[in-house]
Image 1 (tube, rainbow, N blue to C red):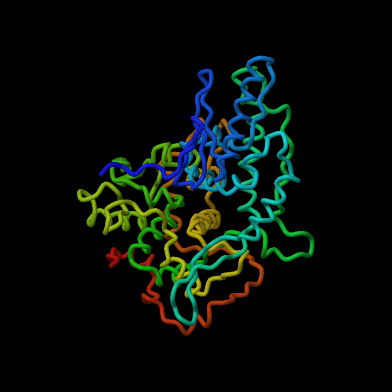
Image 2: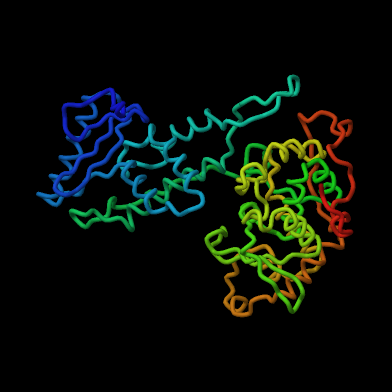
Length: 432
């Protein structure tokens, strides 16, 4: 049997029906220029009227030098074409698709705080779909929670970038003029609480762990997560640097009798090659992974079932272990894996490691040109990370926390005993 064609057809050439989007799509070439537009409508007359409008814009520009009116969907298409290599491309594309039904047909010159306000209100009403565990049935259910202002601001930043590009970079092919004459200022939502107001609805803050909290959290993780998190908190690496870590990135340093990992630029958030220096705790984790996977898989922490790298460390096991360890679950507290990087940075500071060395240890960019030409040596970084093995505890002042919705965590038994994982690695004991 042949391929099933679209169930609907349009008498006007250049207008096609898209089953996936359930709407008409304009795809026509006029005077060696392609017109492609998703109409987001199932009305054939409305789609034909939109095609006539686009053709009239091009005729006016070609005959009289009149600049076409560029809509938001034109800017969004070009924006996505220029940013396909970004690691956050999927999130930005999803944000644009959410905005299309609301502002897709608006002209770029008409976008401002007033025209964006209905979309912002709709976004707050929709919230965010997430998965939670029902305390009574112990089953996972999908619920909608309130979306934070910082999440909406990331979507407004996309609109702001499109407007600035249309004003300062993008030029009309027919007239040579910019797409719009000026870009309005897009006001972002507040992410800091006002004076005397609670901060629960604003951006969540990172939460660095103490040694006791780390032991309680890691004891409730499965062995695979234990190894990945123990490596992360002792090297200050980002989540994807751990998930994508490969054996061919490992390099020996015979002068020190250790090995290091050099992550290429394309796999690092800031676009700079990342040097990962390991203390004896992190090396014990790598030795355990070497015994299991080197020669069998190219990744250091592969998925045993698929052989491919894990997409994230913040799995359901991490989400369950966080409240069970007695850690705060308030909305203003970050409960993600990135807290381990904050923990590493705080411990390096408590150990007296200088600021320039901490920047290199955590893989941050340094704008100082003198520091750029005097890069930190491996021995200096190794000495800094070895100080983490001393379990030196700094003094951290936190506001009073109120743990809600997790029940009596003291009465729940952990999956593993509270044996100190760091001491087990230092003693050479293999993790199960």
